[in-house]
Image (tube, one colour):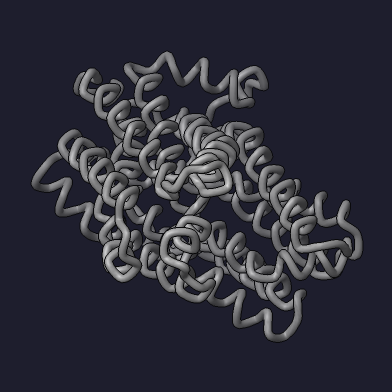
Length: 403
């Protein structure tokens, strides 16, 4: 199916909203939780961690189900209904008066954000095999844009009260639902429609089925390891830069913004150059090697200005995820794209659940409180994981598309 420019734009906006929705409310969450629950900032941080983990668990659990539902009933209804529910969810967050209602909205929010699998399946539907990796690069670019815009807009709106960002997020979700209603054609036809099998519509059942595809199990393990290592950035960056360089919150924000912009540039454009000259396999190997070097550098850098200058350069290795998605998508049948993308969403969610726990613990163990002084220790762990990724991937043979 040929890509419809308006439909493609809708999908990218949907993915920007998924990324932006989290960052949009991030600046006000400490004040909001304190306002609702009372107590100290530490207590608010504890609840914030619970809410974030709940969100990730819901993504892990429901990614395959929404992907499977989209294989059966179509991408269009899943995406549009999820946006409407997301809009209502943000409106409820805007008026929530208890921590348990806030918790419930994060449960629902995690489910609606699991439509990443459906959006990715839509991209796979409209992308010819030779363009899958570069189009998945645009998916990464959309997340980069959302990663930058979310905290910035959220911080600005926070000046108007702790509830303002939620009304803004609800408006954006609702507006995109209306836009999609008019421009989004269905890509699932009777030729590729697959009956719903509840045994496969969960992370474990879907993984068992997807793992039957040639070498996909190895690639999914690689995807999880890579995402786990990459989560060192959002997990400990604010703590690392404060401990190592004494950065202020605004400096942390500037560095993250430069990183997000660089991610968008690399995955939205530069990846096409890498794929053209290195091929899909060479691009993945390059990305793994570059990230290894970047993690080693960050683990030993001592100068804050040097770290700030290097931060956007670390994004030059962010070509692995879209290339892996494109590689796996090419070996999945047309009626299995939603299921595959659901499993990929769950793999990323698992990394989001476990990586912050591991990275923050390692950071704590490497700080003066324990008698150590190596704040960059989590980056050393990520560098070691890159070595594992390299050996996992080089044993993967070249794949061919299904017949």
